[in-house]
Image 1 (cartoon, helix red, strand yellow):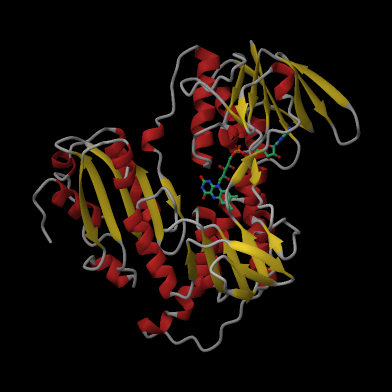
Image 2 (cartoon, rainbow, N blue to C red):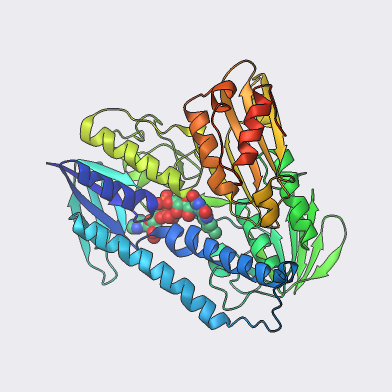
Length: 454
Ligand SMILES: Cc1cc2nc3c(=O)[nH]c(=O)nc-3n(C[C@H](O)[C@H](O)[C@H](O)COP(=O)(O)OP(=O)(O)OC[C@H]3O[C@@H](n4cnc5c(N)ncnc54)[C@H](O)[C@@H]3O)c2cc1C
């Protein structure tokens, strides 16, 4: 029986361990902290929990639009936090139970590659255990990146790990970076009645995503009170006062730095076997996930040039385990990965957009449909937003970007079209139920195929 050792019990590591159960593999998983990694403990789940609380608060504050009068509102932050802990603990213990049921040998401790077939585990009590195996899977994840003039102090200058453990949100916060994490915090904090400023070096929020839908999201967040300072940076900090590159100065209760994440690959023994990496990001053969040392694989946030997302980590785990177990290549289809920003409203994208198409010299046609006249969106008071779909000139659908209600769910319909290279005329044949939010996609596809309706 082939023996595999996995270092890291986040989405990449635990998915590899679970999937290995489909084959005849003997699996050991090493985790130095809590199972579930960033995603369950410091990322996707707690962040989406706070976004949900914020949306609920926003809905309650606007219930009057529907004639529902709520005279007294009080947020009991201790109870709010307890509910978050309950959800996180349930998911973390669920992973533990699943691993046990699939007979994965889970070891607590710090894993380090000693040689190409041996991993040393350093335990909290000082003991060391050596594990020999045929294959090693590295899945050690990532951590927040700081800035030289904004060092984390876990008090005034913080990162997302600290922010998600707030007992209560700060009254006035400056967020540095308008990527997905920065925008999600801006959205949830403004809906929890904090005063929010977002500083971004680029000319538009969500750099790399569709500029039109990103601008739509910025417009909507601005309307709710977020102050965006684009093409701006922070020059200096003096006590609680920030000095911006445009010369303005302002006091804040907290500064949340959200400028990206760096790989967590220090002290895991990369040099002991000479694994190629660039600033800690591990270079792999994307068809198999093998590193420069063929029996050692890398997955998840530590992989160079692939998106740092939990579902990408799952997919890379499946690709690596399949290759180990069967010798067959089943590469991740990186061109059809859904990317969701869980703001209110959500923004979601798949495949290419007009900027990426320009860079890749791809001739595309595009259609755009607004949520303004979509009945369901109007009922929900969320009829601002837009669906954009891209197709190759006289060719298949290659991308889509949606900013609007439930965009994170709607994008999956478009994901299949991109993945299966559907032609606009083929996709436009299907009928969307009325009244649904998906009708905006149906309309967009009809326009793209040259025969619009509304
Ligand atoms: C605020 C925030 C929100 C996010 N929201 C989303 C979202 O909505 N959707 C999405 O897809 N992604 C989201 N992400 C990203 C997502 O969390 C990561 O892409 C995902 O967790 C990566 O999984 P991973 O297994 O590669 O790494 P991690 O989740 O970081 O797990 C790595 C694990 O390895 C362990 N480890 C590290 N070194 C060692 C060692 N030497 N020995 C033993 N154990 C070790 C760590 O303790 C950790 O548990 C978010 C991230 C953040 C910060």
